[in-house]
Amino acid sequence: MQAPERQAESPFRGLYTEVHAFWLAGMSCDGCSIAVTGATNPSVEDLLTGALPGLPRIVLHHPVLDVDAGERFVSWYERAARGELGAPYVVIYEGSVPDEEVAAETGGYWSGMGVREVGGTRQPMPTAEWLRRLAPGAAAVIAIGTCATWGGIPAAIGNPTGAMSVMDFLGPEYRSALGLPVINIPGCSPVGDNFTETVAAILLFLQGLGPLPEFDELGRPAWLFRETVHRQCTRGGYYEEGVFADEYGDRECLVELGCWGPVVQCNITARGAINHLGGCMNVGGVCIGCTMPGFPDRFSPFYKAPPGSLLSSTQAKFYGALTRRLRRLTNLYMNRETEWDAAGRVPSGWGRVEEPSLPVRLVHTIYDRLRLRGAEPPGRTKPAERYAGGYEVPAVVARQRRQKR
Ligand code: SF4
Image 1 (tube, protein in one colour):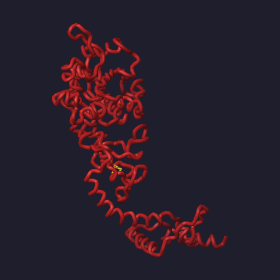
Image 2 (cartoon, rainbow, N blue to C red):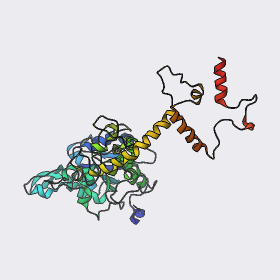
Image 3 (tube, rainbow, N blue to C red):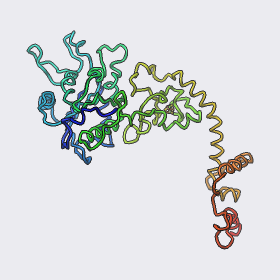
Image 4 (cartoon, rainbow, N blue to C red):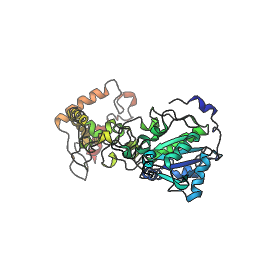
């Protein structure tokens, strides 16, 4: 996405020492908060202490993690909503936004934080109302997790609460004070680093020290969600060679067990869940498409192989079988020192190493001819390059040395 014109005149541009972050939780399980606390690059601690050069310190207001409580905690939100904060702020929304009009029909509410006066009584303030009040003045509104970005589980078919995404709630015309539409960082739960890295990039932009990060047409950080899970999967090599897991716990590709990785945009296989560790396919789970707007309805029933995977796995099995066998031949050949071939034995004390058969040697003789065509062969083969004393072909000299021992 290109930087909108308004950004050049943004009232926020300048070097700030502090930026407030107002966290709101709607229909949420708090999994996004937990995921973010595991981020390492940068970590929440880095952001909160202002440890990153050029970035302002984040003053986090979080309903679970904050040390303030009660009215003192809520008073910060009030000041921001009234435009009295005196510092820029971002809004982070976790969970989907419920339709409070549905709840109001029965005199209740779905999700609240703090209180407000209603009919002379103090009633819970819906988080949807906080979002409506805080969004216009925010430098950016960041929806974190699939519930906030696309509605997620609470908005699945049936949807008794009328749950929706932040984007659905604020509408396509919404722009933050920096001129940005809603920024979406999906995942259930999201990769914590995806969030902190995006926040850091936005803060650099806010400071005028970096460009506006690139977002795709759905407001996802493009550099994080451009690729599919499959393209970065540690099991991709098995897929390519047409080798598939029969059951959970196997180490091969999981597509026949219901993995949606080939069509899902997510970087968890490359980045891991926390500090490059874990992550669905990395630890044996299939991709159920949790980062996608179609989740969960279009991916359920989970763990049932989609019909498209049958087509792709069948073709992978077909060409993969040949590729696998040819690679095995080369692997056998490359697993040997040239000296071992010259000596006709492998001096390993760990066990007998299979000798390449005549066909394998033949194939590799041809293969090496092709490999070396138009290139310099390894070793000092030209007269001008030879060592003094007639040293010519290293393998021959090595054999002579061994014979003398
Ligand atoms: Fe692709 Fe899933 Fe197989 Fe990984 S496990 S290679 S994402 S199909």
